Length: 324
Image (cartoon, rainbow, N blue to C red):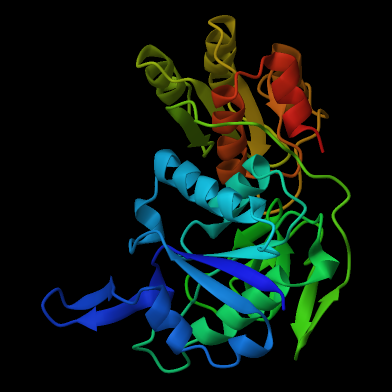
């Protein structure tokens, strides 16, 4: 029978109400969550691996790479056919993409969590965990990299975005659409990923700063980040890649000092393209040497830049990493 390793890290799926703190806190380990998820034995043999019990918002790069190493070690075993990572949903779009970048295995990997806690009516944790195990056990998803599985829908890690604070269907693929759905006991793949990025990173370069351009924003924050030792910058520009001229001037100063700058859009979907040649326009960013992020939004672009720099990629290597 297919065997799936499930790494548990905490998150809403594991939380109970604590009367002392007056809110939800992580409490349920892997065994407790599996006990709340009937029907797994009909899908695959499940091996529970407890990493910890923390909110996803507390994760840093070191912890993320430790988790990735644990998942990767499981995938290397010949008796394991796929893996699931269970975590909080706050930053699944970042952690799943990081795993997608660093893991180099054709075996399916699904990341899941819950939008409701076990203390809430409509707790969705067991259903999401069942669906994720079904995806990790599916031969249809071999070679498709890391997928995010919630609300009976599977999304590619490079496109998925959390679009709502607490809706069941909070996760959407806003550029290219979901990869498929879970229809009862079937994993239905509607489209396949044409390209996966990969970077052999054992550490991340830190700090890498992410700045969102807003009305009237100048380059002061960029200059401060450079002065305090930033390793890289990601700029979420307005529209297709446009900013105030001083923001570009500050970024150009950073690039002249060897700090790589990646340009993306603050829009939830779409990509930057060199069209506008007015000062601060996207075309002037390209001419200044900024790296275009393609369809990667700000949080994912920051993950890619930090891991790319951590792997020692030069300018050409970073541009290849970001190319769509």
